[in-house]
Length: 303
Image (tube, rainbow, N blue to C red; front, top):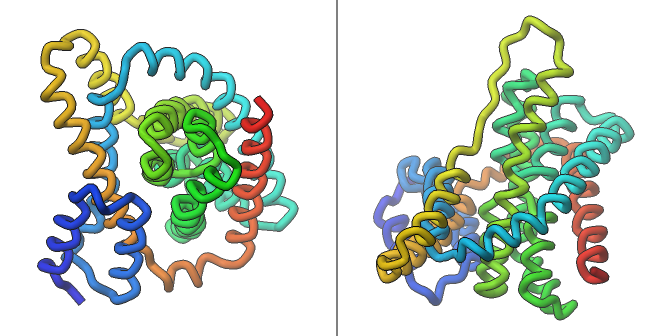
């Protein structure tokens, strides 16, 4: 049922600090289960998320961003390559549709739904194949946001280690940033920077796939422009430090905007679509994700 007032109240509640990213996601899932919608507002979650990430850039240190980006470049490059190869091979082993395997592998390796959306037109994926991959990645994202902070505390990970782990092992930017925010301020900063560094691999991976596709076919590559706006926000705070009070307000707005975006993401979960996605797709996505989580956790613990 459509209830704009219910959604408006939920959004206002999400603006208060007592509502964590995890709680906002759970609230959204509850709305989905009760079939409460806000006349299509849920569809704006992606735009809201990107805007929130850009605004959070106003609260980050330029020197810290540069240092973290340098140290994370090799880590993201190796992880993206290994995850893509493992995902495609697992797909063949499980006899999952080739396009679905590529989409799930790209979503796991790079940045969830954004990578799937970018890769889909390149490999000419059908609508149902895109839906299957998105549902698998989306469900695993929701699980990650709920369990990662718990696992981090269980293994006594410091905030920097947790930030790296979350950025490598969680699919979507929303859940990476949400898990980082739930763990601590430093974890949020590191997770966001490393995750956006990882997301930039959309471009070379898409180009690489284009080069191996049959010639003569028109391809489209989706470039994550919001990442460059995020970098611009960080540069602005560095070049014009006199407006720090304004930057703090914008960064706060970005953090609360993220919480609202997670509420909308949770409320847009389609349980019928989950049933239609097929067991093999979930086995592929789940197996690949667990491998990434466990191996990356062991690596970061021993670094």
